[in-house]
Length: 500
Image (cartoon, rainbow, N blue to C red; front, side, top):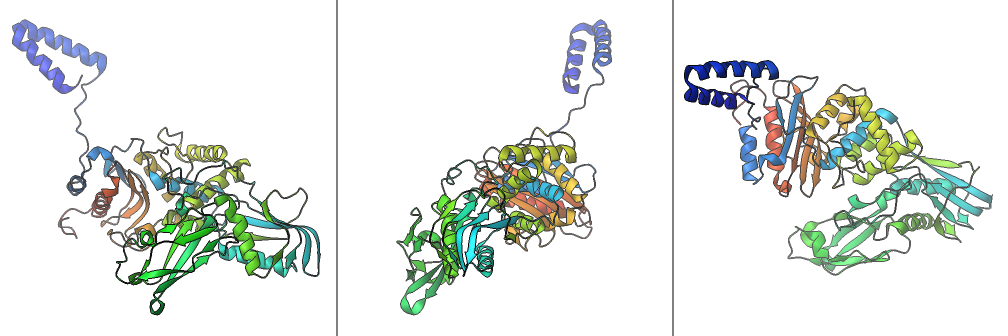
């Protein structure tokens, strides 16, 4: 019973029963207090800043679509906490959990290895046997590093292989899946599924170079995939605007052997590039390895196939990845989903001996209990990247995570991985004051989010979390930017700033 209800009852007792009723009502009221404690005061829901309310109205978003918490670093009462405990879909903010856990558990200098094994006899530049490449989860085995790895094989004296090249991806246990299942866009590189031997993100990069004199744009492709052809040129369109130029190409992306263009390339676009996922991910690694091997002048009499390295073989060389600190910068600054999923599975493999989702979730859940004290019922990790409709966490949870990271020895590497407002990554074009905020972005259909650190005018730094879940979330960017601006301008009016 709250104060207003008790007061109303008291008025009714007085009106109906006279002095005796008043005395009897007083006795009853004191008895209620003795049994139940003092009457709690009514509390109004926290108010959002006026600029944020205006931005919500402009975007046609209800306030209930927003979860937000802004807290001084090092502790203290929140400056703002609104629906902070509600479990919501955080989209790519989930990468903050995966990258922080990895930095803490594996260390910023951790690297992945891709060992090479030779089985058979080498003589006169010929391997009479089998070459093995064993993937161990490297998220950044891009085409340049594959080229260097195979070049080193040739420097061992192997120019021809009279046998097979075997690709071992058994370090991860990833069930077969449809890359287009998430949003029916399988050619998007962010939809590529993880693989212990992940070569060049299983994607190709098309380059377009206009040749005005000939009325065409020349098309380049990297890496050179064996058995995959691309139209060498596409007609130029001298009248089209350079807006949705990819759609104007009318590319046929579904054939794993051939990519054709039925449209034209706008001349106004100049040189450009387009990264797309391969139409047949299971064939990609073999096509890439054979394509690069042949481009180096190597020969192969057998095939490139999947398999496992036999027991007892010793590596003859290995490719080493960039350090984890560099990898988490790629993951967070550019919100790279496939790299985040590789890292998530690596946690399971390194800490529990199995590169599968069950093991990885258990590792991260145990780490969260140790770091933040007890399980958080709002957290559903799913794949660790945020490319998920099932992932959940609350703004209050991310506040605790960010506050913990600020006091952690890996704080410099963690914060350096976040996009800097107005300067790089996914915030390069944001209207947030340059360099005043380091914030991870999150974006899905029905989700828009920001989380990280903001520097106030007063010199106080804040952990900042804001998440919008709503069918109109794509219109929420001005709302999030208004919240960041409000967090930055923490001085009273007249103290070094103008009204906002």
